[in-house]
Image (tube, rainbow, N blue to C red):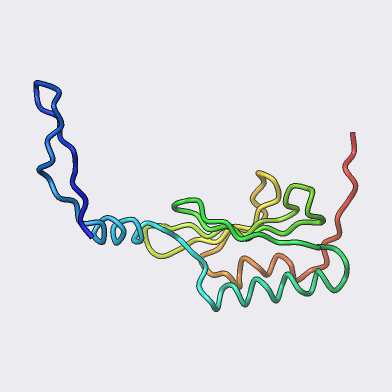
Length: 129
């Protein structure tokens, strides 16, 4: 599909002279987009389901913010995420981060290494004021 790109001349009258191929624009955007693939989502959901079974987590969300894909785990639907796993593009491949708020708890080039953070039992502590 092609769209005419309105170009303005000196007399402020719109000119319809440049064609833009929307398929090319979408292709260029897709290159910069970071998403979790099927295997990664399966791995994330396995970790998530173990904590759901213990009653620790109750909800999750998958977001895509341009160059970063985020899988967030919630204690309840009305709170901020307890943990988040982010995937971002690096110079050579991808990097995975396990976050709690703005703190980086684990960082690795492989998802399984980053998720090893959840292997040892971590229990939520009440906030102290």
